[in-house]
Length: 147
Image (cartoon, rainbow, N blue to C red; front, side):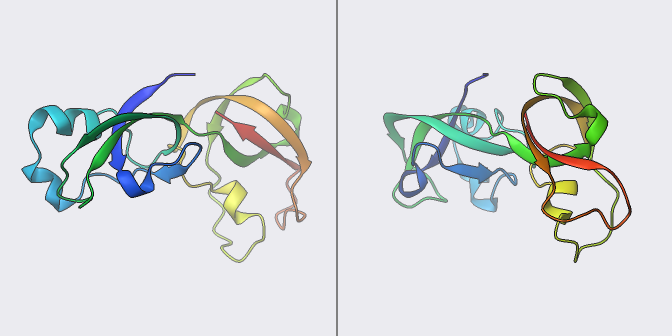
């Protein structure tokens, strides 16, 4: 697992906490370049990260009034739906987010998961089995955790 150093608000820093990096706030423009490079440039916009370690180093921060603390993070595993024929633990797959537009479907969160770039290669960490609801488009899908 690749560990990444970044900063997060002191009040938000909890081991195993996950967060979605949406990019810098306007206030980040006033941050010194050395801190900004650690805080922002190590993270990929749109990805979900999990805090794996908290270091006891706090820096002043314009966004987090109690300061920002140094943390080690890694990209968090994501639950998603894939074709049943590809669902094998340990398999490396090319993943493309579904173009399903049925927002009211109970499976939508798995077919269009938040926190994954649109395309990429991922390892299947765990196969959970069938989705909670049958696919309304008739696809044979399995719920898996990928990273």
